Length: 385
Image (cartoon, rainbow, N blue to C red):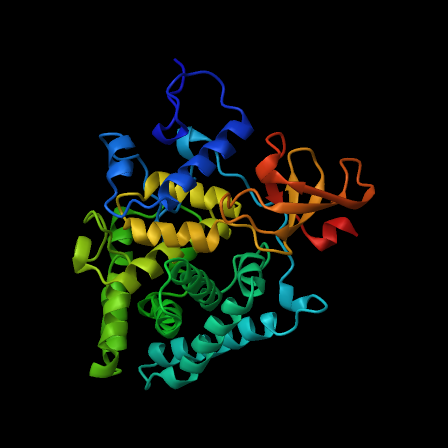
């Protein structure tokens, strides 16, 4: 029986779905969500009556043993090679250093929480501000977080990545710059309650039992208890950690909150958490490339997040950062030289190597004007040496 195409492709007929057709469909969906439609009437009018199956989970443990799929059942596209952290590249110093500083400070915070010592929040607050400043200055930090390597990394590294992506989403929502350090700080400490579990609890390579899943859902309560020790001035921080796994449609946990019961910063951090999980490998699955992560979130989380937050994701994170290396369907390798705000997945590229691996000089492609070529993966400098 022919597979029915998703509602947002603009077609309902069956038949094979070509790669370009998929990518063009997500561009149309992005255009739809980016259009002025604050009440969501157009999305509601086009959406199917029942929600898509298989909502994405922000917990690496919560989706353990269940391979994520894209709309229509297509498997996730693995990132065969990830971008080199920009801070380690000539001419772009400081990015890797800041990510390492954040990781070290956060490790100290987590150790204090684990040992029930006073929480050294003062060590994180200035770094959260520096993170916001760095992201406002360019794409290097976002590239560093996306290109952190094939390994899963530490729990602190995961939280730092969530902070990077949360600030990008907040900026995409036009949240005032003065409010963005609070988003960064909340994202850094959002899962502090995980220190109440064994270190390897979320890293097992088998499916969780029902009891283990229920245990895992306690960690927002633990985060709230830990952060409440900071006093009334930081109650907002404890609330964000408590609500980060809640969803607008009431499907989240631990309390099943919905709509305006959830503070906006918690929504931002929750969406960044899902994006981080999708774009980085876990013990039981591979990562997916950024635009496939956005596509999956839009297909499975429309009811879990407000349109304002989803628009922030699209604006802040769906574009390929300037300077990143990409591989095309034609097997050419190119560098992103200019982003295209109207078509986030179709930047202007400078082709570096042709399909045979030979160096190319001075050829540019505007993917927004070229319907035959599209990006299929990220590439690394090491691949090209």
